[in-house]
Image 1 (tube, rainbow, N blue to C red):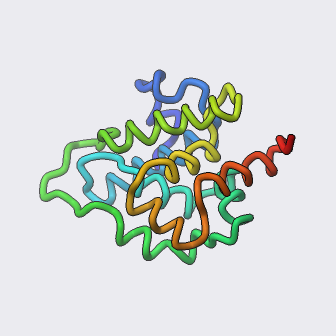
Image 2: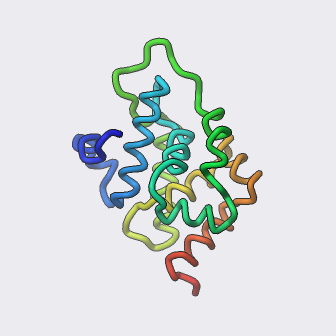
Length: 158
């Protein structure tokens, strides 16, 4: 797997305020995109990385809502955009990936967090219409339920 430090060394703006786990997820998403010969890192790569990585708050929130990401892995893989014949040397975040990061920062602000963690990536995956959001909704997860789940996990039940 790509080292998060190596991957983000020239991308400081991208990782500013990000937890180590979130950095690892994005580095793993980069690796998935590379292996899949994708032109860009997309939300599907991020969900696959969340499904196969360590359990952070985001994955724990999904599991608390009854979502078994490893069981959904084949469906997640089906949603990954088709590969290119000649992909770029190293995929970067495409427009959908950039929008995901912006939505994650927005979710963090909504929770009054001054960091970006895996929980914010999960909330971002549920915010915008996409096949990923549809898949998670089919498994009973909405933005609202995940938002409340994250708050519970972090002891923010007010």
